[in-house]
Image (cartoon, rainbow, N blue to C red):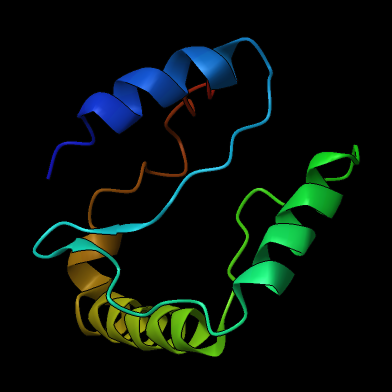
Length: 104
């Protein structure tokens, strides 16, 4: 699935400048996530407090429903990685091959 759209086209230049960005999560099949924050004032306070600091998380997961969904996705991803381990590793370089330099 391509990562595009008005949100992406707006976010990329902001992040490229090195600015901070607060965004909403979307369920591509149903619009904004169906689970609303039970304590929206606390969510706003957390985001505001974090936005004033220098040590920001790369990703911020707020709410037990979001944590549960991430945990479920991690289980699915890990299961698939183990199931397809041989195929996944079949594309590795040989030990004698020169490794590629990763771009920053």
